[in-house]
Length: 104
Image (cartoon, rainbow, N blue to C red; front, side):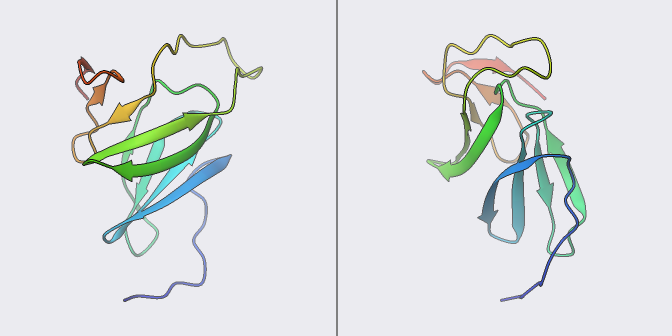
């Protein structure tokens, strides 16, 4: 196990953290993207999401699940009629019922 005191935030409004093996997933409330950091704190990839006003992130069933805390006032609202479920490796997005939404 590696212990790190702190990382610089990869985004303006980090509002959700999740460790996954040797990666830290950071949900950004401003862009609603998920930043994936390696153990050095460097961004290894950025996953766009359809989440609006992202406020949480979790892993389950082999997917990344994101949460929203309501409509945003910073940018035009996004349509979100489902709970975003994202493939953790490629960043593929899926509808809440499991049907694919788009590829990365």
